[in-house]
Image 1 (cartoon, rainbow, N blue to C red):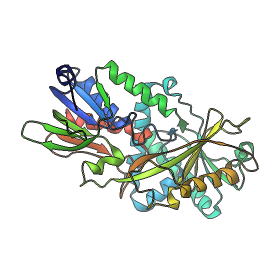
Image 2 (tube, rainbow, N blue to C red):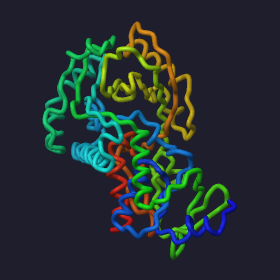
Image 3 (cartoon, rainbow, N blue to C red):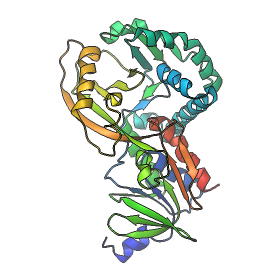
Length: 375
């Protein structure tokens, strides 16, 4: 990289903190670090021209857990762990809203819905609504979060959906506007965000950390935070973080679209919502788990066909539609849904593995790692 004296001095000398990844977690960590210590020189490195993982690729769900997902989690782990994760998600959403504000990111609390055509699964979920409402009240202070909502199915126009459960506290956001505002806040605090710079490796010595970039350039930083979520294993191979691609499509505007809100289907493996009179639909990863365990930002006919099948048979039965756009993002998952926020070495920290809940939990995790680095 052919840099001038001015560029070297301005951007790459006397750096206190470098953060790898400019998504929700990385930018929040930068913002919180700067607020704690305004004199810090903080830079954020991003491999893409925009945040490349999931922060600007997701579906914009302000959600914290559907009934079937929570019941599935409770079969694998303890109530205390599930409750703690729920609390983190809820507090993370509150922090995100406090940091950005509802209007700048188009936050609307239109409710979340889980739709079912599996009678056995639905019966299990319905039976647990009182228990989960009690858990939500105990952990989050929320009353009557879940309720049976079959009465809305006909109004929404769905087919093959005899059962539905509503979460009245869930909302939706515009993730592009959300990230744009986070970047603005970072700039206002004097944080430098540099795009198009991919880190290949880091090396810690007695005094600091050396950051190596793909173009052969390297620089020193006093402290380093890895916030690359699904890509974390490329820099920290010892971590239990696997990439999980999520594919999405969005339709052209649909006249008189009948529903508002965020929707979960098939234990949350499918999800859809309204946006600008369009339907945004994503998921179907469970039809090709191995194929979607990848860093490749691509779309496949296997997944896209599954999405369109749900769109035409359940969401928009007997209606015409056109697909406007398709894309994918990379999440970070592991053996458990707990996040990894820890000190790797004296001056290296990480905040990764959002488990598909980055919007909900990212702000809190970013704040946690900033506190850990500068406690």
